[in-house]
Length: 341
Figure 1: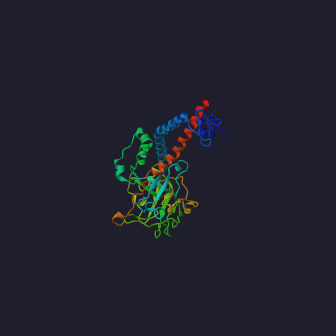
Figure 2: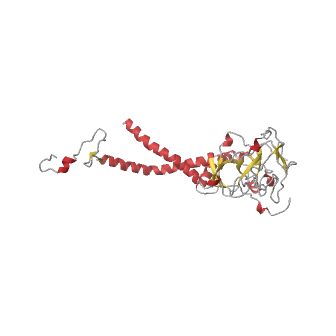
């Protein structure tokens, strides 16, 4: 090893090198195996990037909240089942996802499981207190009020206490009768074979105390006739024939279609339309017509259908979308700036 007089042997073994073609300006060679260390310019750039990330964090949270609100308001919402009116299809504490877009592309079908707001149709007190809103009030209810309710729901605020979940049996124009000589419900004269989804031991005409199990109705335009799968305890259209909606549910009060059970994991499954509703003759009719007990405590009825689930799913989705967008922005903006320079 060659060494200059009075020099340090380490200087000869590990010389300080000038920046190579692959090293940016400002980097200095460090005599430890040829490795380099960042210079002052690179250290300053790293500190500025860290400060930039901290400044962008509030924006990331806002974007995630906006995405979560949009998803919950217009796309999909989770609900928890608090009662047994839809057993065994939906069990107590099951969490379901409700598709809010599907009925913008197709009509409601018989056999669908729907979540709807019963205020004004199944809730007489709500109907008595309601007034006819003006044009501006209706516009507010259809837009900003939904958004504000969704924001409140993200932080656990209840959206309402009048949401129900039931199965659609009759759509506008259908003639629905319970029951024929075999004890089956008929829709437009076609018998429904319901044992695939009814609660074990229930029959088509099973009913709670105080509610008549037999009916003969024609569903008017814009309305639905709905029943629970646990007929023996379900407070459904049969029990609301004296209410403002005559037991019917307005189609425009339907929040969406329940299409999947997401919790608990062992109960996870898609919620299809039962095959019996695919029979020829059970179709949407173009005609329209006007709709045509024993005293026991009704405590056994399951009136409240669903409650809004915790908002964590929508928030998680919002962050899942917002984080990649923020990362992409941080990756692309500096490159564009460099190209301009």
